Length: 409
Image (tube, rainbow, N blue to C red; front, side, top):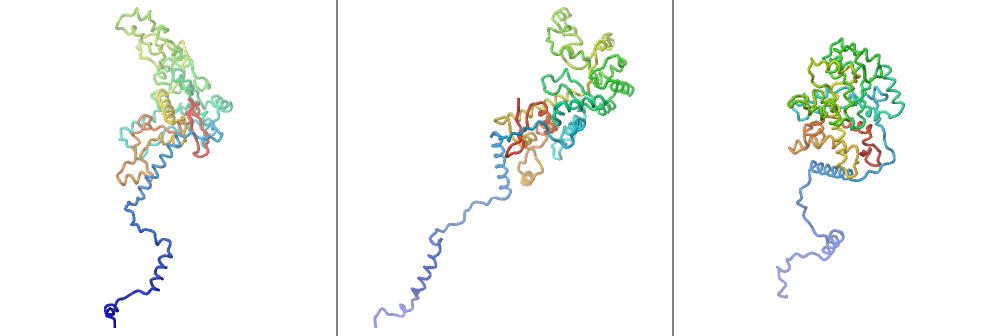
């Protein structure tokens, strides 16, 4: 018996060749058998909120790209804005008055003093509408002009010419106001009831007149209505374009002969009007020329606070054109310009709510934006209609981003 045949050798367990072959065939039959094994990556899985923020960032980048790229129009340019509640001139005037301001949001970031200031400013705006705004809601055609003339003849609408102000602003030379709104404005002012009655009777007799004669009312009524802002001497408008040397009261000869330190040395009491100002200067009541000042010229119709109204209108138009000027081609999607007008404000959408829960920055408060800080909540659609009627912008349809807006100046 050979010496290498021991019990230890015979007790070894060996795999059969058939089993090893079958095992090899089983492993080799898989296409991933030779692929190297790798451990799972240690990269942290993004949460749903992070993915949502990333999507928002991508959307903002896409919006910027759309603002920089030239829009492709489909050939149709909108000359008017279609509003369901504005079908005629009176309804267009009412719509323009009602849609001028945006309601104060719940999360405005303003204290009670500022909220009161904003509400009082909005309340004191005169109920007038520019003729350009009416042309933006209705076609600027002869049909619209005939409707305005018919309403004037019926005593339902008054046209006020703003001759002394807004000469450099297109579309603000004439404003419209309904007779009911004018009467309500007279009643709300400090004008006596008898003065209101006489003034309304004169307006009913002269339906289409934009000015009245001083002889139509007593001198005391003229003084009260002038101080309240409902009448302005039309002679003040004639010297709007006069230079300093061309005015008779502020000419070099008269000033040189006046005593130094007196009011005549700076042009006298009427220097403001003679230089083109609108309103009534502070004169001494004992001056005999005060009552004669209104005797030789007509009295133009006006409304109180027409100055703040025109300044707000001008600021809104300039801000809209400034936002359009930030784009490369001075055009962009209408929805993107609306977002720029409102500012990156904190809202109640899901992104802002998620950021507030995490304690992150979710946008500035509305009180910090120009819309509420300087423009007192002026509505974006209202400003677009103003600029459209004045010919400062145009709206056109695009293939992919809806309505586009383009500056024309």
